[in-house]
Length: 457
Image 1 (cartoon, rainbow, N blue to C red):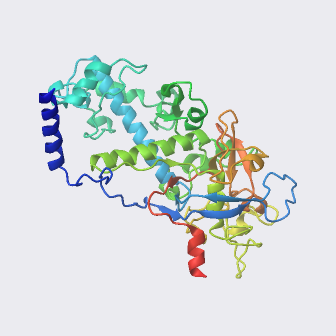
Image 2 (tube, rainbow, N blue to C red):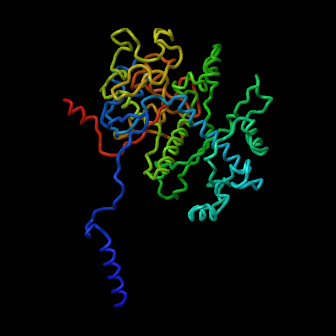
Image 3 (cartoon, one colour):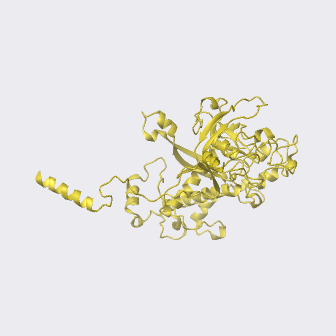
C-alpha cells in the first residue's frame, strides 16, 4: 500500500511540475478564435423586430400577423446564389463521380496507383504502405461493411480529368467516360452531352429536433441520408409558361457565361439544401488541409431570419428600401418585378437581372425584393406565427412539403415584394423564378443591431 501511495505521489508531482496553471482552474487551452467573414457574405447583426404585416393585408390571406421576434447574428450571402456559383457545385459532383467510377473500374481490373492508364486513378489506399496507421485501421475494420461497398475509400484528386477523347489514356478510361454521356441516339447536332441523371450528391445530417424530443432512441436513428440529383431543371423555362417561346432561356440560361452572374433557377428546395451541405463540406475540406478549425454549416435561412435581413434595420417598413412606393425619387423602379399590369420591360428587364443589381438594403443585401423568390428553411403553415417561438422562430415540419418562399420574383406583382409577404412551393418543385441564398451562424463577440442603433442615437 505504501508503494502505491508513493507511486501516485510521484506521478502527481511530475504532472504538477509539467503544467503552467499553478494548480488553478484555468480551463482547457486552445487556439484563439477569430471570426472570419465568409467570402461574398455580410454580417447581419442580431436583434429584435416586428415580424409580419405592418399594413392591411388587402388580399386577406392573414397568414402574417405582427409579433415581436428576436434573432441571433448571422452571415448572409449578399446576393442570390448565381449560375456560376451553382455550376461550381455541378462541376465538383461531376468530377467526383468520374473519379469514383475510374477508381472502381481500376479496382475491378486489378490496376494499382503504380500502373499507367486507369491505374493512375486507382484508390490511393490501394498500396497500403502509403497509409497512415489510422487509415490502415479504418481500411482493415470498416472497408466494405456498409451499404456502399466503396464507402470510405480515398479517390485520387491530384490528377486532372481528360475530357478530350484524343487524350484518353486507355480503353478502360474510355469505358468510364462513355457512361457519363447520353447515348448517341439521344444526341443531336453532333453534341456530346453529359448525362445529368448521373450527377447525384449524397450527404448526411442529424435531425436534432427529433433527437431532442425523443431520448429513447439511439443516435444513429436520427441520422438522415439524402441522395439528391443536383442538376437544375432547365425545362422550367418552358413548363412554367404554356404557349410561350422561352427556348433560348432553356438552352442558354444555366450554361452560357453571359448568364454567369445571374441567379440560378430551376432548383428545388431539396437541391438548395444539398448545395448548402456541399458548400460546408467544400470549405471544411480546405480548413482541414490548413489545420484550421472547422466552420459552422452553411444553410438556408429561417423565415424570421430572412425577413429580418430583408428589412435591413428598418422597422415596420413595407419594402427593403422602406416604402410605400416601388420607384425612387427619379422615377426608376427599385426592383425587378411585374409592374404596371404586366409590362415586364418597364423595370428594364424581361426575365431575371444580374444578382448584384439595384441598390442594396441597409445590411448590404441585394435583391431582397424581386428578381427571384428565395427558398427558406421553414415549412408553410398559415398559423405558424401564432405558436412559433419569439426567439429564433422556425417551423420546419418534415412531413409538410410546402416550403416558404420569400421576396417575390421577376414575374410577381408588387404585393409579393413586400418583406412580410409569404408564399410557398413544394419541396421537390423547381421554377424559373425561384432561387436561394445561404446563411451561416455567427460565432464570436455578440453583435446586436439594437445596441448599434442606440450608439447612433
